[in-house]
Amino acid sequence: MSKLIFAEKFFLEGQVVGPGFLEIKDGKFGIYSGVKPDQTAEVIDYSGQWIAPGLVDTHIHGYKNHDVMDNDFEGLKVISEGLLACGVTSFLPTTLTSSIELLNDVVAMIGANYSKVKGAKIRGIFLEGPFFTEKYKGAQNTKYFCDPAIDTLKVWQKRSNNFIKKIAIAPERNGSDEFIEYAVKEDIAVALAHSDATYKQAKQAVANGASIFVHTYNGMSSLHHREPGMVGAAMNLKNVFAEIICDGHHVHPAAANILMNTRGRDTTVMVTDCMMAGGMPEGHYQLGEFPVEVKDGAARLDSGSLAGSILQLKDAVKNAVQWGIATPMEAIYMASTAPAKSVQIDQECGKIAEGYAADFIVLNPALDLIATYIDGVCRYQDQKE
Image: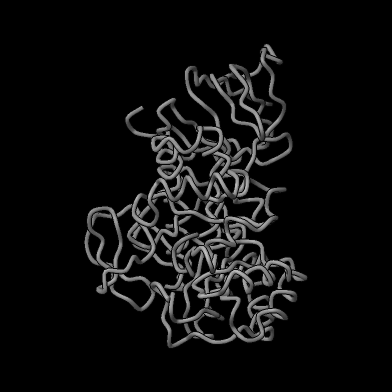
């Protein structure tokens, strides 16, 4: 038997409708109607509230004191469950630059177990590294940096049961052209990151098939009027997506606005780059092999450099709206549909549409998270409600 969700607004792809009723049947979305379509159906009443697609985090290293690089399935389950309180219903566990051997083991662990988590759904793996360059290393370990190797990627794909959905490289490294072309043929989205590439090099990488710029502005060659660099490429090239971390620490709100205005909000992707300290008190943590201090809302290495974030994706949405750089509809799109499209999983998640799994969130008009649903079942409820 189906049930109906009644709410003031529903954020569908490209439009906001409501008040009205959204059908949930066998854990999937049915039709939306402005009037009650089935007089006998159970109605879940969210009067005055908003219904949005579950958020999709395509760049996240950890949460609740667990890191993907711990290579621990129990920790992965904690991350999955914890993300429901962030409004996230789908995510890509994200690795760090490390030894080939550890990466072999981590991708194998995820590939063998991803379907067993009970919280936010794991939709693939994002390999952030190790094919980077030193100048913009960020919180990546330079001793493991190397040139892109197709044979290495083949091993990762085999060990992960073909579950690699995204890989980040520095396009100026030797062998990048052939690597990008191969990865794209394997339906792996190639992202550009931790790179001192020129605009020309970035443009060539995109011509070869690269399609995502990782945490734009951070870990990349900056925009200069005589050398637009990676930032200029992220803003100006067509048919690509640009990630942005809207935590107020990585990027000034005005810079985020400039990216959104030039890139377009339909191809700007909100990510968290969250590390294990997400959802935890301030203090001392690890990001890969590096000690990190979390203080005043930011995670930093001993050098003072940012080391991922403790951002929750629901707060990125709220921040963008409060900063006046996006409407609620645009911000929700940038944190759900756009990320799903960027890694070609938008046929599975990232939108409210008939036949899709009923993974959605309930927000109040202040964009506070009220509830998170997985397959039509409420799995997180704000305790203040």
